[in-house]
Amino acid sequence: MTKDHKKPGKKQSILVTGATSGIGNQLVKDYLLDDYRVYAVGRDDEALAELKSLGAETIDLDLMQREEVIEAFAKINDIDVAILGAGMCEYLDMPDFDSAVFMKVVSVNMGTLSHAIEGVLPKLIASKGRLVGIGSASAYVPFARAEAYGSSKAAIHYLMKTLQISLAPQDVAVSLVVPGFVETAMTKQNDFPMPFIQTPQQASHAIREGIENGQDVIEFPKKLTLPLKALGTLPDLVWQQVGGKLNNK
Image (cartoon, rainbow, N blue to C red; front, side, top):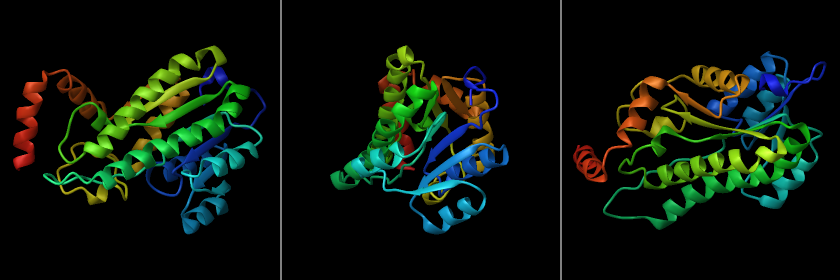
């Protein structure tokens, strides 16, 4: 919760999507330890049951179902911070471009986010709260095999930065989270080196600290994200050569 949005005497309400695994799961547990009221949104019954036993208000919800999302979120009394982190990753192996895989990844990552935004926005406008979307450092540079995942994350970056402008008149703050590699079920599939990989606990700490400090962009770890941003400014010809060498490996 940003310091300028805190309300004395009121228990703050946090909504987290993607709450049954990875970063989202850790965020729910950490916010509960700090005595926040937490709405945990996910699909894994066992994980939801654990979070409920810890004090979370759990919501079993398919975020791809727009009407169900809007109906479920309308039942929540208030939301001060919404952290939207549900998503997936699958890689493409060229020379076969599997459009079904591409569309599945893009549709899930953008669909779950956009439906959740529509559902939580009235609550955030009422509370003058903060909307948080999870992007990825992969959006900074082009990586072979990550055509679908990287495209979806680049779209999320654009969306969140646009919302920073368009929601300012409603006093809704917007944060874009840009993590590097984090130890989750999603990254276990990666068969390549993951420099400076973070634990879910480290990721949760960085995100919560960034929200507390009112950061528009929450990047971590800096020793990975800053070089990637710098590399992303190189001419396309350079990246085509670099990418080709990496792909050949």
